[in-house]
Length: 461
Ligand SMILES: *Cc1c(COP(=O)(O)O)cnc(C)c1O
Image 1 (cartoon, rainbow, N blue to C red):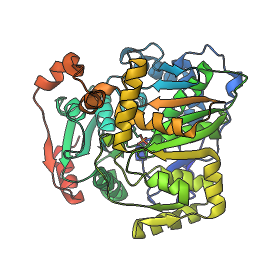
Image 2: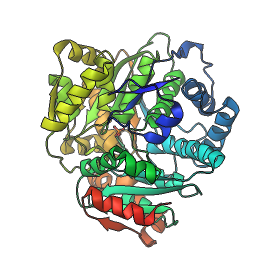
Image 3: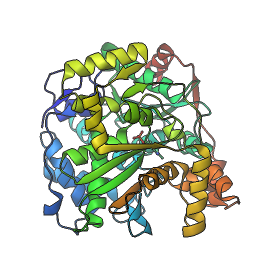
Image 4: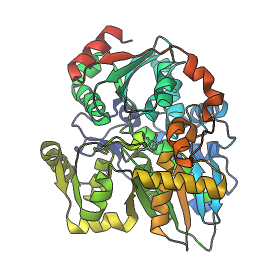
């Protein structure tokens, strides 16, 4: 499998794509074609690990042998997940199902990709006797997942940028209490979009990033997307029902990474009827799907902070696919967007998008209502991100199909909001006393690319 940038035509290898994150021309890497993986030919009792191997292999076979891949998957996906098959399910009704993706070590879906991605990096670094420095911008959950996965590595240091005061205490402490010497947590006085911009600026400075062996693990990294496709297939197989062959997935969305993974599964042949983009008040994607106008507004701070994002980076990959995979069209649309903060797609392109995507924006009052409603009726707690997903799924009101909502984080990560919504103290944090008694290690850095570059120079591998 070869890859190309959404803004260029060069053919690249998986290795390049894995380590570079962002392409030199500012675009994102995408595969040259979509291999077809026929879900009907997969054994219905396949394990999550075997399914991961089956889906990943066509994309990575130039990089790693099947045996090595199998080893990495078996090791990475064994010790750290609290559920045998990684994913678990909660049935709210016979056609409303929550896909629990929070059984990993940092209690959000980001663990699926990180627990595999970092060992893939290490596999190569070990062989080549190389070391790298990862940078990552986090709206809360990516950072802790990456830090957890990196802390054992002898070959990788990580610089993790998060927006000051815009993540939950639990999320911050999951990062700041990890004190291994290869972990650098950087608090930036700005928003997530500012952090993400710093990361992109550093990657675009190819001289700086190659001299300092910089790589990125944001959801702009193709390998993360690929790894996340697996749970769409797994869910479909687990609930296979020949009488209802096409299904809906509702996905709490920020950077458009997780739902784009659903789109990739769809492109590989998974029978998806609708992918439902669930946003909070930061609704750039919801507005886009309804109007064809992709336009930033200022970021609002909400109780679902992992979705407090205006620039949904992976959106560029969808745009590229819709614009007949034209790198020229994509580059000019994205340049316009970077200049003016706005881009518009043509009617026919929007039609292709609304054929597969639906969307819904859920505001705080409704997030609280959904949390409280699900708790009352099912005695089950959901986190605020998942609540936006459930609301979007219910609004779509498609009772003829299976409706899956990705449950992206464990409610304990957002215990304040959850307890407020159900109107009582649930003592959710009592199992996590440790986290709140440990010392924190944080580096405060100005919202400025040069300052971050300087800090990396002083501390890198
Ligand atoms: C990251 C995250 C999201 C958004 O995922 P994207 O891939 O950025 O769209 C939603 N919910 C939670 C809990 C997250 O951590």
